[in-house]
Image (cartoon, rainbow, N blue to C red; front, side):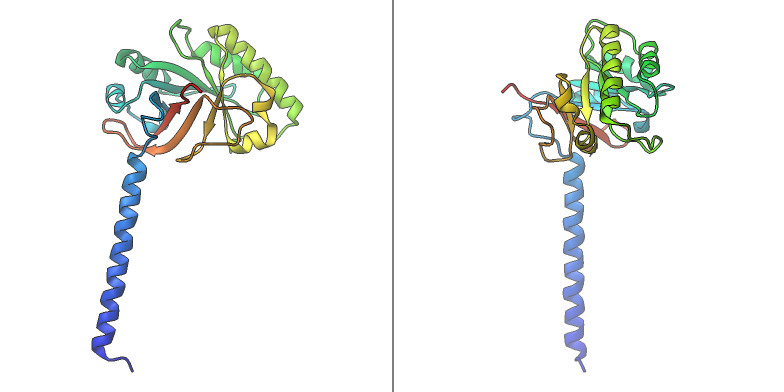
Length: 233
């Protein structure tokens, strides 16, 4: 039988270990939500945002180091982000370089998706190239043949470029790239997505990197996606 004194000591040790682990977890969480890539390595940093972030204060984001911003504008052929116009105007007022994002759907024709984007996103000479987000979505179970996807994507990119006069950026998830090899098929600039560690899954050098989706900044609602631009090689 274990003596009460020994048993009490073991409980104190266990409690100390539990407290230490809890503190480590808290510190790790605080680090994660405030982390961004070192500005000495990536001087140009910014955000991408959509309606799920709620109210956003662009002056606060600018003060936190955002020099550019991308706002989701359209999803597939028939949806648009409910806060796009607000974000678009907010970036302009804060003096942040701004761009629009279209979320590509594998279940809808590119011609219809292009119409949705063109009728939603205004053309301004100083705006950033649009971005096309390429990933699998829960509301679209289709995984068409690669040739079909690349053909549809080519048509969409051409339509967006005609509208804005600038070649779109391709934001490609790892799983989409592994399935369709988009970075090998198009010469467009690439936007990679991977938290905390620089991505290496694309066939070519990326221009933008979404480095974290959980950063918190004073004045912005909820967590935000933080991005960097690759420095000149």
